[in-house]
Length: 304
Image (cartoon, rainbow, N blue to C red; front, side, top):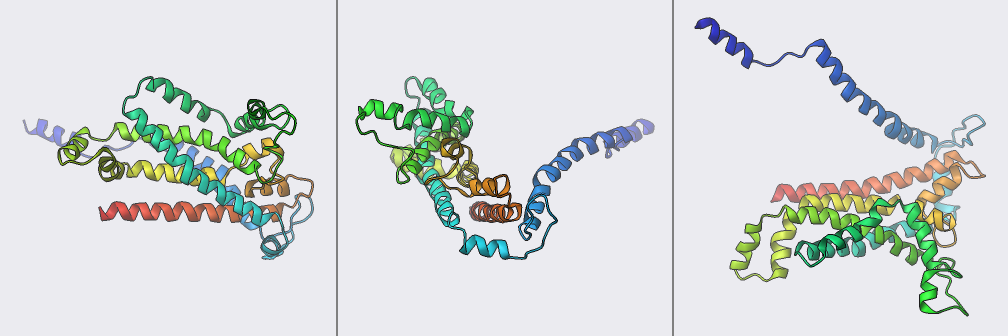
């Protein structure tokens, strides 16, 4: 009897990993960590270091200090329009496309007729890359053979939706929002399905309207989804590249920071140090938005 009790006690103790178990853990954890260091953090650190050099990719690396950043802020005309366009992307996706995706999720969650069809149709653009969305935008907004001018019947003096710098940014934003809305809708729809129905019933018993129930009961429970959607919106707004490059290579009113990075690093100028400085600015702006948003959300979660 005593020996049986001893065996049970030994079995309940912490399990010791064998050499094979440790090897498997090292492989499963080591490979993703190594890939993360090589693919993400390695280039990030290299870009920060190269941003203080005048390297062109061929000659010897020359240390220039903050000269790249001084030229970027004072002597590079494309920089500030690109910053404004990136902020416009962020505002448009955050204030128009994201709320619209939330509205669609609420409507579909109520069980409207053909909800499955609407859900699939709205989500369909999400499976397309932004480059493909850019090509579709060309088919729709092209001046001579675009579908929009054909629908409007404007054939004698067609509107140049993608060639006019005052219009093309808005047309591209509509195309990007078309894709972003479906992604946001799916995320919020999943969050709405997880909301406890008893909360809505309790609010209805207390006399709350549907609008009051949503904003005071349902929406606060979607805080985890709000964090995900907020971070995704910031990333989508600041990393935009494919769609504008597919339309006109990010020129003539569609300048973005990501396009400037590409033009300087792999363009004819081959100014890797200067392009790295633009990339670092984009990294700092992105991290600033994301970290600030996450800190605010974490503080709000702790105060609840």
